[in-house]
Length: 246
Ligand SMILES: Nc1nc2c(ncn2[C@@H]2O[C@H](COP(=O)(O)OP(=O)(O)O)[C@@H](O)[C@H]2O)c(=O)[nH]1
Ligand SMILES: [Mg+2]
Image (cartoon, rainbow, N blue to C red; front, side, top):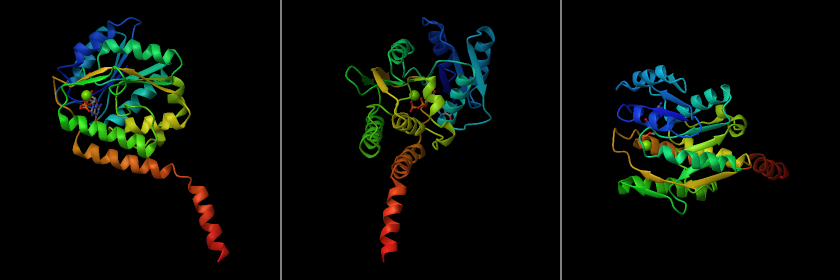
């Protein structure tokens, strides 16, 4: 389980405790971006007493997308078959993780802990937050053709083959829109995406790191992916044929 953190000192120790208490010896990798609140030191202290907990320290706030990518690389290099991600803020209940892994093991390449399938729910999010999430998903469905109902969710389980196949270096998004971009490439590569209903509980401790800039970047990402997915070679061939005939 890759847990990116930036200022999560109120949450991290309890979260890791609950993940480590799950059946199946779930290992945890904390990817901390030099959190000013000392989350990195807390992670080190936990890792010092538990060989199933690891920490990657990065030099500064380099973005959620690149934190996931660093975590994926670590998971691939260390031979894990399932590489998962979640927020550190308890919006994603650790106890839902086995359901995600079970579904992946039953033949899905990417499993998303989803608010927007039957049985899923959102608790405590302000209306604006709900609207942004709804709007981002609607754009991803209509403009990009992504079929996952909750493609902005960070609670995920990837089979290692997915992360070996998708070109992680070619992913442009460094921040939150990484999630939409990854869902898009996973589906385009022909992998099977499944969803497990979860109840998303808005964080009670610490502050959200999502900013207006991340929302603009997400819109740009959707536009960029749409244009990059157009059949440019055919379009240029038609254009040249027309042009040369004159
Ligand atoms: N390492 C790292 N973690 C981040 C960064 N931005 C956000 N996070 C973490 O990513 C997770 C999702 O962020 P969060 O603030 O919960 O976003 P929200 O759920 O969309 O409000 C949390 O665990 C954050 O601590 C970042 O730049 N670097
Ligand atoms: Mg969160």
